[in-house]
Length: 140
Image (tube, rainbow, N blue to C red; front, side):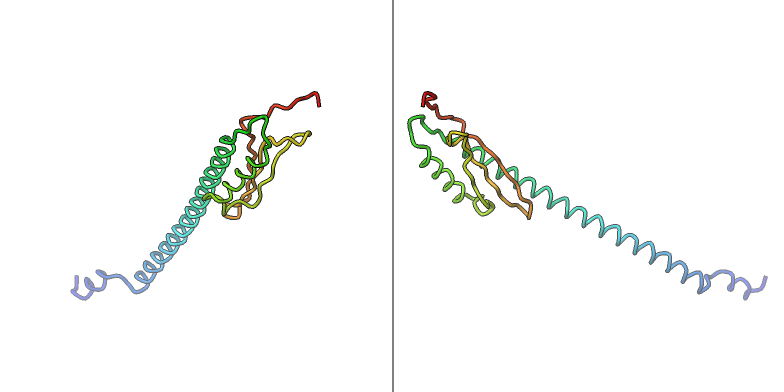
């Protein structure tokens, strides 16, 4: 075997090197696209979890606040409810609240509140009833 024949067979041709580089670039670009898609999905999932946690926190706060209102049966409920609404608007969740409406029965006796609030462009409604229900004379 000649020395020249051995040197020619020992290396890679330019075409083989270019093909290898092209395959590596294609695989690398697929990896970048897959990583980018996974990161977008993780970001959306993280936002959904944060939104759900905030909604749960706000709902719990509203229900606990309403549960702490005890209206005596002989008292006018308006000051108690006005104070509750004021407390909710002044609390740390007040910036999320869009509206608060008093829920009354057919005799116009307040039974609870309905709060509508928005978290990350997701509108939610919570209905909470008072734990103490006023006794009303039915003979009227």
